[in-house]
Length: 379
View 1 (cartoon, rainbow, N blue to C red):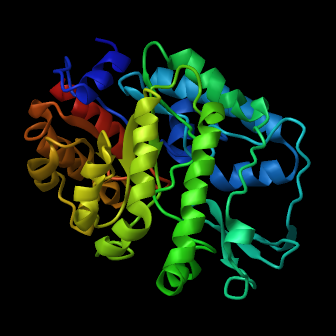
View 2: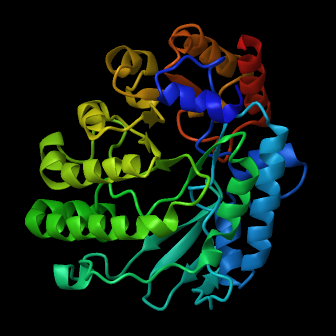
């Protein structure tokens, strides 16, 4: 079997020749060490600044060349994901950037007064101040979909299409879709949860219109050669879901299940990434029809072996190596993580080895190499 066939076998309830290996993403610091040079691949802040400065082509060229070389070098990896942030979809070739103004080192402010700050820990630029967070009005008139579609410029898929074309026959490629729509947080987490609490009917109306818009966008975003989607909206923190399962079912489950089924109609495997403690939501994940649950955060009480015991007949699992051990642990910690799941879950074949999130910024290179080496010893 090649990688594509191996991963497809897991989702087809067949027995692959070995356990597949995959990652949500390999972030820029680890990717650069594998490549032996700096890269824009999954370099969130670096890419954002380059886009602000109009250096879009430079970024896209790096994404294509570096992704192909990265996954060629780590040829033991069976899955290539070009559907996640700063690793696929880019601004169109002729876009005109409207960058925020730099007000101090690592801090920017845009025309709406929103303040963005660089984090040296995550190497990302995040919104830290929004003067309209609590005053901005949300209604169906302003937020609902009016039924019109502006097809995306095909150049936004330049990197996605090039990487997919290179790997589609040999690796299992995960690409974009219209939008996941696991739920809708109007104005961000805090404001969004407040809107859910105070105006649930209006939120649901807006949300379902966004589901319809996502369906209308799917024909443009689902790219030739991709085999599935990996959706990444988080629904929980380390202790519990962000809202009660009852509220989630009433407001968002119908739309999420509709999105999953739409992907299946399009021949796409659906993989749901969800950090945090999602135990109370797993029955709904299964009911919605996802093919695989990725992340399975052990540090949030989601022991992957326990999840496997209860849900392996409903969906495949992808994970097993704790991100905390990659970043802060020892080589031996990582090897033990690999051994634990390869000796228990892996022989049952409804399993993909990976990390509890991604190979995230801050991962120790020796730990990443230990993961690959220990996995190789099992196969």
